[in-house]
Amino acid sequence: MIIRKAKKRDFEAYYKLKKEEEKEYHQIINEKVPFLSKKEYKKDFDNIFSSNKNLLIVIEENLLLAGFLYGQMQGRKEKGKGNIEVIFISCLSSPR
Image (cartoon, rainbow, N blue to C red):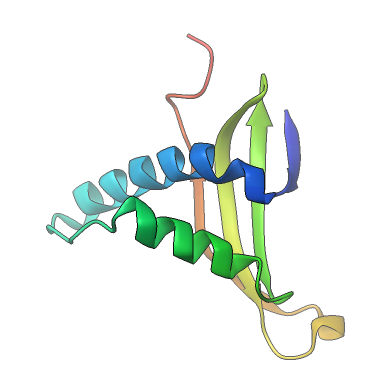
């Protein structure tokens, strides 16, 4: 297992995980929430890289992305404070 910062080339794998995460989230909250289009996901993904306060960490298993963590630093980065907005590990990515 490798845990690393996401790279722009990770979009397609991230997109699949993000769709899976949102499907699970909708089941948990038991509400229908509109899904974003792939173009909107791509825009959001690219925006993550536009600020050094954003953090997207991916979990790689057998050369496949198996999960991600998204968060943001709050205030001054040297103070080390931030929040995690989403953490998701896929069961579908693990060996069967």
